[in-house]
Amino acid sequence: MSQENVEVCKRAFEALGVRRETDAALPYIDPEVELRSAIIGGAEGNAYRGYEGVREWMGESDAAFGELRLEPEEWRDTGDDVLLLGRLHARGRESGVEIDSAIAWLLTLRGGKIVRMRGYLNPPEALKAAGLSE
Image (tube, rainbow, N blue to C red; front, top):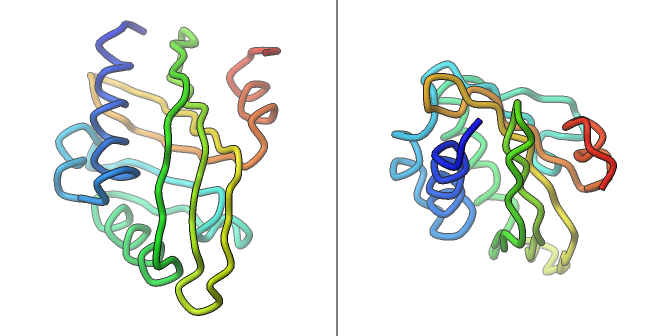
């Protein structure tokens, strides 16, 4: 892993989680990516695959939430993956229920592109998955 991989992840998540621009994130994501979200499809164990899967996940996210914002707080190069720790702010589109939660993403890269994205609402679980204790 390198700082370059962290930068790839930062650019992808700036596009996806902050600006909400799927196509702007795709140059940083492998066409065969597997995405497992902590909230959208997560309870069902859904895996979104490929660029169409990323688009589907973003569409489902936008349909469920009138407001959805990821605030990255820390990026860690774990040696095998990149770990993002941050906060999720959201408001249900129909319910109006607000969410303010810790969130983590564990990202695996190959050849300079993200090949796997796993979201966690429990950051200690993400740390454990990354082989870290804190």
